Image (cartoon, rainbow, N blue to C red; front, top):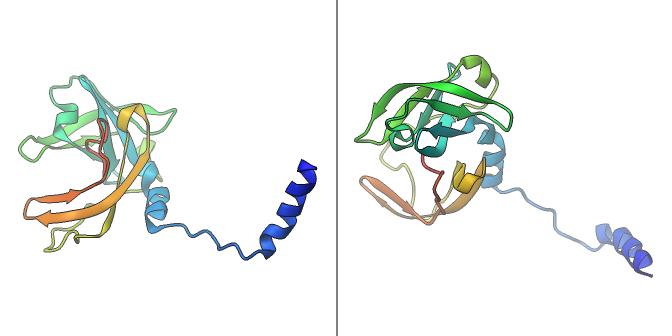
Length: 166
């Protein structure tokens, strides 16, 4: 009886007017760029980073790699490589790393937004991609609540390990 009901439901489902699923713009962005987001390991823990150049440049937060002798970038589940710290700015909490370009060949490069008057709008949906809570390539989304001169305030759920991600 159960199987007969399931078969009937399967036959009727296409004719009952179910709405088509719509993939959100946030889901499209995540699918397009997630492979360009990496987990960054420093001596004191981990964070996130993202590919900004095909030449192997990766951007992260300075505090993720601060005082680290060994920095590693986990590209995917099976590739973890050494990284060289190219530059840091502790005042802006930014660090630039370099990995061998061959390990990031073909991966999506995430462009840094140019400075402009309105970088974000209040009420706009935003996403973060990172490696929080010992997970990898996780997307979280939210709304921009307020835009101030030196801050964008949002309700995006940011957890330990998201630092440095886009």
